[in-house]
Amino acid sequence: METAVTKRGQTTIPASIRKRYQIKEGDCLVWLDDGQSIKVVPVPADPIRALRGSGRGERLLELLLATRREEREREL
Image 1 (cartoon, rainbow, N blue to C red):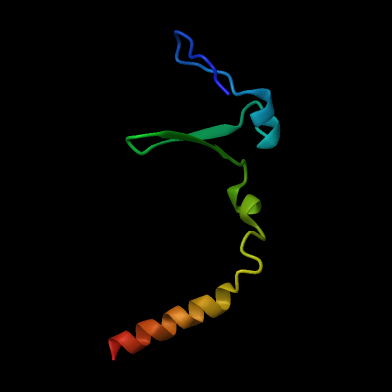
Image 2 (image 1 turned 60 degrees about the vertical axis):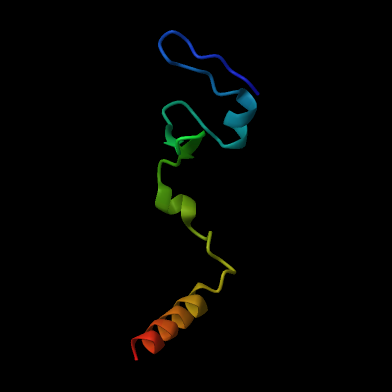
């Protein structure tokens, strides 16, 4: 997809992308510039709620405990 930039530096987000990422009027976007490319990331109105449940099935507790064990062993 390709869009043009106006004299005022504005551009249009294609409708298919707005629908896929549920971007609505008033939503915020973050522009990430790594020096070679630019990423535009939609920011949810409530980021904590948006992340809820995203770690399910990752066995985070076991990973945390294993990491702590390794750190203790290195300290000895």
